[in-house]
Image (tube, rainbow, N blue to C red; front, side, top):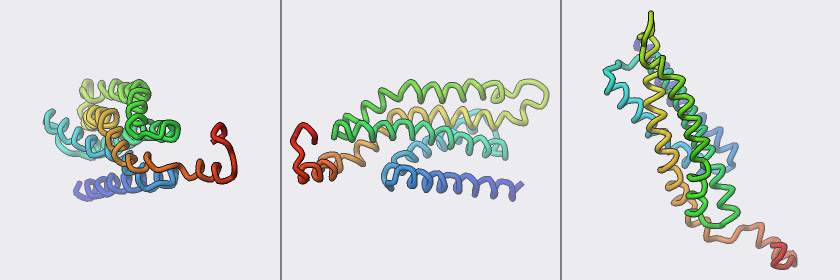
Length: 188
């Protein structure tokens, strides 16, 4: 059991690190992946709180649910941050971009999280023969996603606006290159 816990704990930490590095490659930035994973501590807090509140011991299924929850929470944060990056390029204001991303991606993030939460509810209840065996998995996913969804919709846009506040006031290098090439204001 200790070996299984150690392996899954290492897997959880390894998953977070690999997710971060994969997002670094995808976004070609070190800051945006950090903004994305800021929802993960809330997911971990939700998992711990839910397991404690329901009196569920930490087990292999609970750690498996934690790893699943990390994936969904990261995907939801990517939705918000990628849209915020698009809006930042269009508006040049990090706060406006973060607000628009939070409002525009509210429904997709909520639908993804609710689909997973509702799908895990029967498992979390542990009803039926042998149902208590997989209940920790469902409870971990539900608790983590509830907290991670709030963090994704409220905390991640705030961190994005703070991380990009300085960058938003600097002129984009592409617009300077166009201006130097002799393009007029209508094309820049």
